[in-house]
Length: 296
Image 1 (cartoon, helix red, strand yellow):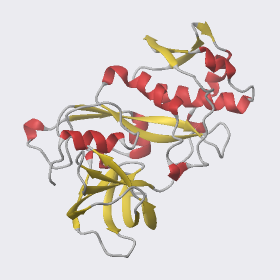
Image 2 (spheres, one colour):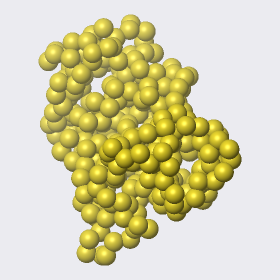
Image 3 (cartoon, one colour):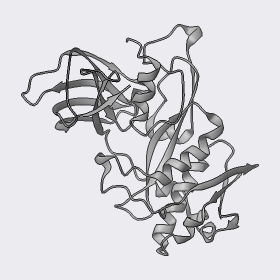
């Protein structure tokens, strides 16, 4: 597979909101043995999504963030995230958990955001097996509904306990112990909902800054997948010709257009796909999708 340059790789994964800050990745072409990167994954990642796809260089970390379910109170759904910065994994994970996944249309109505507006993580510290999370004062405004509170505790506790050496999670608000601590003992794997088949998240056209034509079109999925089939067509049904590649971490199918066109935001495309995730769950679809446009 052809290498994608650094800017395109960083852009590709960041669009998903499933990747934290990193540098130095390329596409899935097999590199020379001496250049191959090192991939680490938490047990939770492997359990829910399988082995992390290889990277060309650097040390990558695959982990899970558990987002509260809107359909089953107190339950959580796992999502894959990646980072090249081991030191910040816990704080980054909690920041993305609080930010939520509200912009993912494929999961609208399935995820809820129980954290009060303005909630922030002030500090994350670890002593032996205990991780203490100090939240901003907004967390004290959490709804009094026990199921809402348990959803927050489950999401935070399960996200943190996947990391090596973490056995206990302590909640604080502006340095003071939180009443949420009484719910930590109830946070266990029974709160995790089983994953359904992979989903298409969206389709984005990429072009050079200031350019008129879209050079590539990326179809993003909600987890690492092996792409069995990916076809993109215009509203007239005419297939967009080009070569298909898989992006870094196998999170997207990348169509390198043979004849770049000046597509506009919102251009309707017909997308046909067939994918299988790393644990053998398969999905296929045929849908009309509005194209997003990004510059790099």
